[in-house]
Length: 134
Image: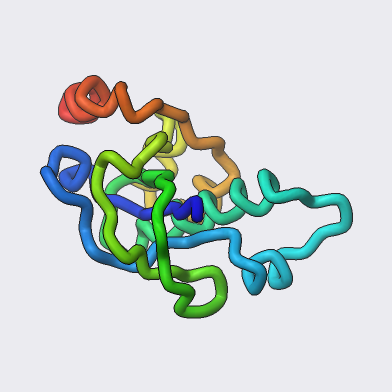
């Protein structure tokens, strides 16, 4: 199952991913966000954006989402609890660009939600950590 895990900036450098709920395009999630003509990629995009919004609840200073393939247990409304999750399961990381970061810093989370996240392949993780440390 493809899951979307909201992260804090500091968690990018951690050896292990945090144990917290993630978002997935489960059948229940797809019913909730149903639109005629949507396919799984549309629902996965929405899942990623929902996870990005959850960064606010974590007290994050920007939106960061790890996309991973792993086994997970549904806990309802598209929320899932990954059974076991490591960096080896992560396929990509999605982060706010400059405009998104500025909006989040100003507390304008809803407006930031309209901004696209930048995509990084997992092999770029160390470069991303260095870039965000500046």
